[in-house]
Length: 288
Image (tube, rainbow, N blue to C red):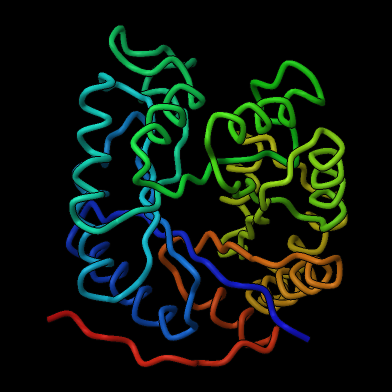
């Protein structure tokens, strides 16, 4: 059986300790030969410069194919496209184009007066340059701002029609959630690849809190299982088992890619990859 292509998400460091953690994470996961890695953009564009530096370092010194996150938040069109151009000049030709979360302290997204109104406008502008492979976000569980159960499918179709070549989903906890979404997208005429996003559960309490904010549905059985595992000091064992089981079901259902949200903590992602049968296949080129 051919295993799916792997990809990993990192976030840019904001402190010296966080910087060491990022580079340790890259070192540990790069030998698994990911198809690409992505670097996030903080809420409200707060890590814009840090993202740019992390993207260039990973691309230039670690030999990885990097997809840089880019959002519409708190920037003019000119500023946003200038960032994209700087990526192109650095040899980075993949962008994850997102609307972005509201700035800190704001409850809703408000476009910059001279900025992009939504992700579709950003995608169209990036696509018109002809310089980028554009990836976008997708939501198997309803986005908190979705107007209806089918709105997420409709939005994804608009983004693909605007020029995106593939989508990466928000994380979810049951394979059937992804399959239902994938089938609904196919029925709507979406033919672009939809990559399932996987979150190895490093901290169940934090995961629950984040899931509530982003709309990811938590099965009761999973909450009960982690509550018992925490009590019995078996959290990481359950986390690896749960994530491996989810990925195995996705592979059996035909998934050709798996995208891991690493949270810059490589241990669980590496353990799951090894459990699935992935092995170290490349030597990592070190920082010059």
